[in-house]
Image 1 (tube, protein in one colour):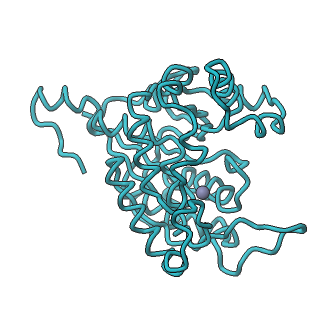
Image 2 (cartoon, rainbow, N blue to C red):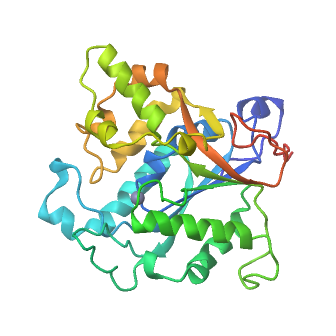
Length: 304
Ligand SMILES: [Zn+2]
């Protein structure tokens, strides 16, 4: 945890000390692929950022061909823990595991049933309890999670959405989960909209314009425009200065991220120019915060 600023100089270096942000994610690596540049920016400004990782990512496939070796697969749980430790150091966040087991990506038609005991098979009421406890102990002003589609339809991402919304609502209510700590009501709840179509289209167009091969041609051809969905974005946080930190955090998840893959196919300079922000949707606000806005803490009073 960063120290409280004790004089004017540290106040200038950490202008937002005392503010707390909690990101709830499904797997180790999600904190680095969604909203990671704004995380790094808030950390640099003195905000305390805490990541909650719902599952251990035990069923994640190895997506980096250079890491696809039997000894890595045999120790995947421990290796993913170590990767997460590196990523959190790079991002400057603290982190807790919620302790649930990865549900895995269901493959086949029809899809197979969920593995027994996995995160997505736990009743929401029960799965929200440890998150309520963490909200009450960390006392975030702002919480982020995924939209109701999960951002992408992994069962753990959809479950992460449900559990986060339930815990956000329950944490401030003394009648709910009375044994899980002193009630604390976070002020704002956001959904990530990192992978929105307008962003992908803008980056695709810029690649073509520069005579480069776009990694998104196929995805865009299949992805029907959804203007109403895109209009749900309320908040764009400028964070291009931290795209480098985001990329380092992603690379720390070496079993999940191929350094020669699509994550790094678009030159960073182009991203900085074309889409220099990360996108969110303000879903609940207990403070006055007119949208559109450019700061997750807009309307939240300075705690000092
Ligand atoms: Zn995930």
